[in-house]
Image (tube, rainbow, N blue to C red; front, side):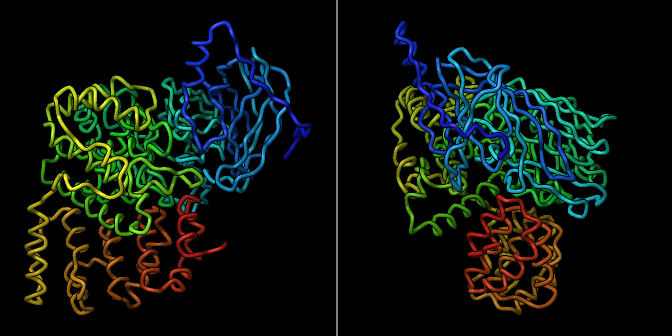
Length: 617
């Protein structure tokens, strides 16, 4: 570290006695947060002015973060910092003392900054390091156009602190401005008001006027172009992908309209999507105004665009009303899956919506089976103290949360439930909420109001899934199962029966291969449908999983699996395949592939696979 003040700082909180009720209210504004060192009830940030230079040669972000703070007569403010080089700190305009506390492998270090009871701003001069986990620096060969480097950030859950010193708790919402300097041949975009064309000097100015949580601050830099879909929707992508992405996501405006018809006006002015290089670790990330998306959803037939509906839904559940802590993560994702499926139903019909929901239900069964030895992990309200929040980012939050809400809807009736949700989003707009507060709101404004008995506590606080669960059915899935049985019985495939199948039908078809499936039968299906060479990433993933499970191997299949794992960094996909290798005692083979692939993965994905395979870099 440079220029650290090593003298110990003694900080005391000076509480006012003039208005104790007001002080108590302030003290209780924020709940205890185990994944942040910040003490926001003492001093909390409210606005960020970020001024940074993106240096591709040094692979570092260098600059300063200036915060407006709400100061409760405090003598210190604490930020979260991890793998950052802190060079100097100002309180208002004067140099002040600071120190970094003991390093925690998961949380990083508390950055203690000395302030006065009347301090209004702090400024931290810093730069990122080679260990910074939120950033992925890509060389030209790792991009679609292979001409220029690329950079993107991923802040969820607690990685924003690795590229900005900040109070990295979801319950702390801030507005921000940013000035970002990049090479002149590249464009910078953020989760804020964005440029539509490149500047001549590589300097970009951003403004996010609505308060957001730290994990939603995002930056991408690359040789990208913008193409509008409507006045308030559009896409960013590398040049070679712009036309394809624009066509794939051409229903975005229709999605926004459908969402607004359900739960109220879109609050973020603009809804754009940027398609990132394939190393992006998630399907999508709901950064306000600018969703980050993986290219694996660009299938050519809009069959995977439910992901865009999902990220759009986060504009209400997650971005507008945010989980207060990561223990309450289901409040973000369960609501969003429910909303996503309602959007898909409005646009594409009940059959498509139910197929998506049923695949999620199958994912939930798989997750419950994998967590059978740790039943507490299957509760909606989690206790993640001492654990990485990523541990709770699984099908329990998403699909059990969805199932809870769908069961509620079927119990009370859709009309009442929609009215409740619309009021919920309006009542809690631009705020954070924890599980207990939601349950109190649910009881008062829906269940007690309509005299409905419902086992909410069992759903939220007990392991597993209660017996009073909504049953999701799909005639199309039943037909896919019948077709498979016919093909296997006759040892012959009638391709015409599958002519109009959606991605969801194919996924269900492949997932439900019988346990006794033979190599010859795998070959029969591969010859008929060319699964091994599928250009649809979801179909390819489930097929490769079955190939590993059924030991359907050979040079062609093995080569394609390795190509998939080295080219795609989406954590869900690669974790599924590496789990299949591990399940069948093929860790050595998996590790050989992983050694080649790891450099292409974001730290979020690499950390997960390191743990799964017991790999040490």
